[in-house]
Structure formats: C-alpha cells, structure tokens
Amino acid sequence: MKDTINIGIPSKGRLRKDILKIFKRKKLKLISERGERDLIGSIKNRKNLKILYLHAREIIERLGDGSLDIGFSGFDLFKESKFNIQKKINLVKKYDFGKANLVVAIPDPWIDVQTVADLEEIAFEFRDKKKKRLRVATKYPNLTRDFLFSKGVTQFQIIESLGATEVYPFTGSANLITDISSSGKTIKSNNLRILKDGEILKSQACIFTSKKSSIKKKGLSNLINLLSK
Image (cartoon, rainbow, N blue to C red; front, top):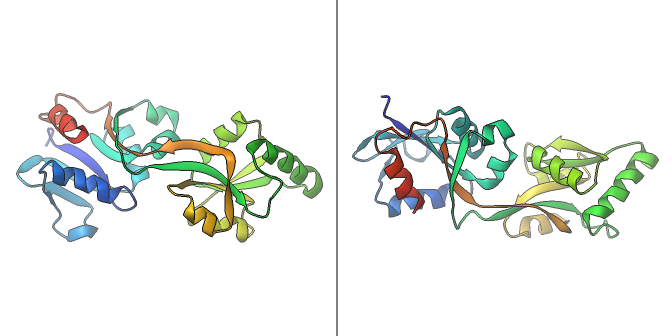
C-alpha cells in the first residue's frame, strides 16, 4: 500500500524497552504474531502502520534510503553514519532516556596518560620505539577519527570492534578504546579509565523521519506529532 507508514524500532538493546513504552503511553497497541522475536509487527486498528524491528544502526540506514518513514535510534548512531545519509534524515526530537556518552578509555596502568594530549606523546613513542601505530578499538570509527584528529592526535590506527570493545586492550587486539557508556561502571570494571577530556559525544534516544517520506502520506504528520510529544 502506498500509504503504509513504515516505523523502525530497535529489535534489541538499551533503547527498545523505553521506546515500546512510548507506544503504550500513546495507546498504540503493538501486535507481533510470533511474540518478541518477530521482525515485523503492526498496530491494533491502524492498518496503514507497519512496524519493522531492526538493529538500531540499520534504522539510520533505512531512514537514509527512505524505506522507513519514522525511526527510533540513538543520536550516536545518527552522528556516526555517513554525512550523505545524515543529510537525508530529519531529527524530530531527542528523548529524555537512552542517555550515554561516547568516550575515550585507556588501560588503568597508563598512569602518565590523563588527557587526549598525552595520547599524542604515547602515539609518537609507539611509532618511533615500537614501529607500531597506537591501535584504537571502536564501533564508532568515524566519530573517533574526527575527534582524535581535532585534538591533534594523528598517529593511530582504527580497529573496528565486533564484540565487547572493553576486552580489546587485554587481548592484544588494541591499545585503547572508544565506547558508549551510560554510567562508566563497565569501563571501570574492565580496568579501563576514561580520559579527563575524553568525551566525544553525548547521546540519547531520538525520533527521526526520512526526508524522502512524503508528508502527504495519510496520517504521517499527525503520527509524528503524537510520538514526539
């Protein structure tokens, strides 16, 4: 149906639960035939609304290509996406949940390293003495690269993390990390320490719309208003 409004909700993770509460508060009853594992859902008595449960990163991509009209994801993932994707997406509202910071964290024993400027010295030491580049493990290569360059740190190599980023410095896969952290507890419990000026980005849950979506779609602007209040 050309008037179907496609809505992307994270299929798992820290944002999902709070996003589902928004629908409940707005008396929009989500229906999934196969329960929580269902990837497609609907809303009771709203035939033109289709729910797609996707990875929070994919929601940003699908908003960019216009296959989603409305999507819920993190501000961090929006800012990490390619600039030409960001240009195709409207940020409607930042919610008061899903708050976390993207930070630079180093192994605790690096007592001489307190700030990002100290990292540059270490990076040159690595290059000159060990003939290696400082390796930074992250799921946020674009934001990490931009941040470090902006602080004058240039001698490093990005290692894209596929799992628990915190373990990378202790398996020899990387020397330090950048990661999303809401309380800092996980970072601390893994013998890592956040640099004093190591905050890259403040993030939170957001509702986005695709610029490609025709606002003429029946009920789309009303729905956006309802979900973003």
